[in-house]
Structure formats: C-alpha cells, structure tokens
Picture 1 (cartoon, rainbow, N blue to C red):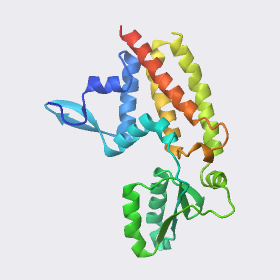
Picture 2 (cartoon, one colour):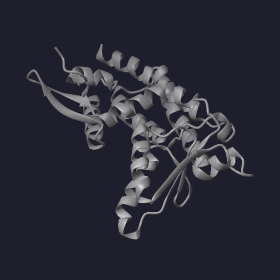
Picture 3 (cartoon, rainbow, N blue to C red):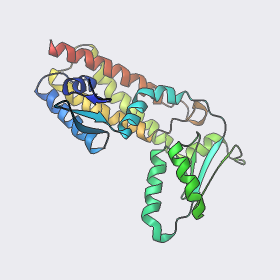
Picture 4 (tube, one colour):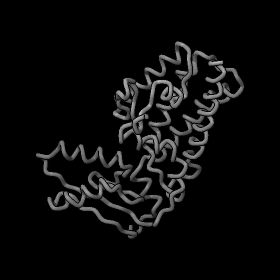
Length: 247
C-alpha cells in the first residue's frame, strides 16, 4: 500500500508532464532539482522504492497553481488588514525575516513598515501576530476606513501591479507562440522538456508575486486570468505532444 503523498518515479514524471527521450529526461532531473532546492519536494523511501513527496510548502504551491483562477474570483469584504511594526535595530535579522514572511503571504508594502492585505491573514500569521503583539513591536488591525484615498489607489501603492501586468503580458506573448507551435504539431520533440521547465518556472514566479486582488482593485485589463488560461492550454498541448513522442 502506498504511503500518503508518495510519488513513484513514473508517477512523478507523468505529473510533471514529461515523457521519454534524452532531453525530456534531462528536463525532469532539472525540475526535480529545482523543486527540492526550493523545499517543495522531498525524497523518501517506501517499500524498498525511492520516490518523492510534496512538502507542506509544496502542497501549498500546488494548490496555488491549481486554484489561481478561483483565487482571482474571491469576493472582497471591503476590509483592509494592516500590519505595522517597529523592530529594534538590534533585531534587524528578525525584521528582515518578518518582511519576507509578509511577502510570501502576499501582503503589499504600503509604507516602509506598513503592510496591507485585502483578505484575511493566514492562521499561522495571525497566531504569530497575536503572540508578537505582547512585545509592542507589532500592531495589526482590520478596518474599512481608508480616508480620502480610493481602494484602487491603495492597491497601486502597495503592490507593483503595473509591472506585474507587463510581465504577465510578456509571458502570454512568449508562451502563446509555443502553444500554437505545440497545437499545430510544429514543436520539435527535443524542445518539449525544456519548454515545460521554462514555462513552469516563469508562471510560478508570476503567481508568487501576484496578490490575487479582486478586479476592482486591479489596473484595467489586468492579464492575470488570460495567463491562467494560457497556462492550462500550454499544459494540455504539451501533454498531447509528449504522448505523441512516447508512441
């Protein structure tokens, strides 16, 4: 009986959308190395077989990849969650680590030590904030009040949304060409593994930077949803092309 979350080599290769062939095998090794480096995948042994298992961070990343369209459709309750902090200079490392954590939780930096989220904070971050509040270094609260500044303007100041939109557009242009090549059967078999590795890396990087704000807080014609649709189309086209090379 397989252990929970255990992925054998053939199963993982299929999950990565990679088939046979020398370059596809090299791409698979590169993808595995990157996933392990980022602590998203861990190597495990089960029943005499070596395989892999997603870490907690890996499961979270996979959920984001699968659920990006749903995250974009979340309803906003109109409340802003603000986190303000003032770490002592002697605690610089802790301050930098805290800022990194806020970024991974998709909060935006409104001012140097003022961060904001449009959605409820994660249970882990909420628990930490409650404990840290006793040190008087951190203040956090929810409020619908924002003064004379429009909500969309708050979002623009807190997140580099225009730059993100440009990068999504670049992704759509570059990988849109490759999707067409795949769908029309014009992609060389030796390119499939490299294309898969590159597309996953670029798309994941964009999702990590995306706060998944509701449409009303985004710049007009924000291309996030179009990128999600292209990603799904790319994966499907790549799987069909890989199956063709395996046959």
